[in-house]
Amino acid sequence: MKRRSYVARYEQDENGYWSVIVKIGRKRSAVSDGQTLPKARRRIRQAVALLLDTPESSFDLVDDVVFPKDVRRALQTYEGIKEATQAKVRELETARRRAARALASHGLSRRDAGEILGLTGQRVQQLLAG
Image 1 (tube, helix red, strand yellow):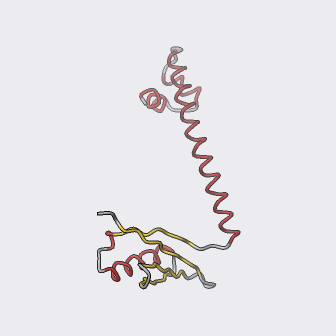
Image 2 (spheres, helix red, strand yellow; image 1 turned 30 degrees about the horizontal axis):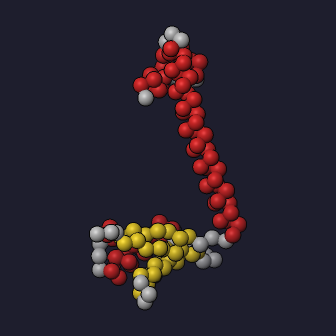
Image 3 (cartoon, helix red, strand yellow; image 1 turned 120 degrees about the vertical axis):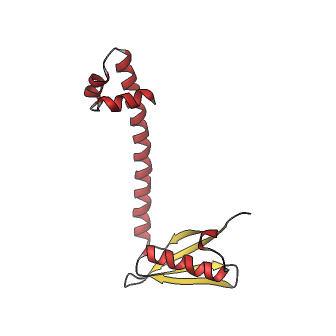
């Protein structure tokens, strides 16, 4: 049986308090709130479970946090840069492994290769093993 998934829509009021609603079908909704986002998440999960008369672990909630346009734009910029950075980190790890292998094949010890790469000899060993 496929797990049910519901969208939890969060909005923050002028005092910083979070309200959240989950629509379940056409006529039913679970509503809750919380002083913090984690507390609102816990409470809405409990509310949905009570409404459905099912364990809290039997369904998924997908967060839809409402923010003003400038905040959404800043978050999109952040996510884009984060993804690009993670790609560069993977590229760096590949280059590091290749350099370690090249130095080892040239006859350098793990310690000397580490010194050149700015790594420990143990890390060079891990790169060569992986």
